[in-house]
Amino acid sequence: MSDAGIHNDNLELAAARIEQGGSWKNQRTILMMPAGKMMSFRVAAAMRSLLTPPNQPFNFYGAEGMEVGEAYSNLIKALVVHPVLKDWEYILFMEHDNIPPPDGFLKLLKHMEAHPELSAISGLYWTKGEGGSPQIWGDPKDPIPNFRPQVPVTGQLVECCGIGQGFGLYRMSMFKDEKLRKPWFKTVSSGEEGVGTQDLYFWNDARRFGYRCAVACDVLVGHIDPASGVIW
Image (cartoon, rainbow, N blue to C red; front, side, top):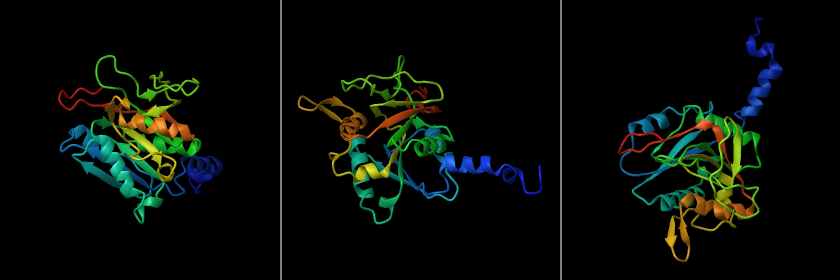
């Protein structure tokens, strides 16, 4: 090693690492969480422990006591007209029963920078209970629209038709697209609209306009049952 230092001794490799992560440009992010009045300490600790890129703004934005679809839509509605925050690059959705790893946000950012064709990438988490399904919803290669759970692949991105919102990074720009219906997120249960969760309600519309998403199987996210303390 020379007196110039390890990174300067291999400047090409060091520069490629910075380029790949994208931390040299704006990656301003808002963490958005709808929640009840209480959350598990494990979730709070995970949120507190999230690593963020150096010198990048990272703010919290939340709603309390609202139905989850209503909370997301109301928060985003206020966000996209905010005089400052509307120009930020990303929204990181996190829910009050999900436990991401400390480097989960950094990994999602890295994937987003490497895949500009994707508008959102989620960490991998499963539905609660025995026999739970991975929240990798739908096979985009199937010509018939579907939200069948897809198989996770260790360490890889798996493109799908819809993702959960327990821990997912979205580009802010997609919520400025006037073609997308509003409210963006809506939990439905009726004879007219069928039955569906707020996240897949959104992706059923977003896919129609060319928006794509994937799950990062190198970002492993726990899904805690607050009543029992079991993490699925």
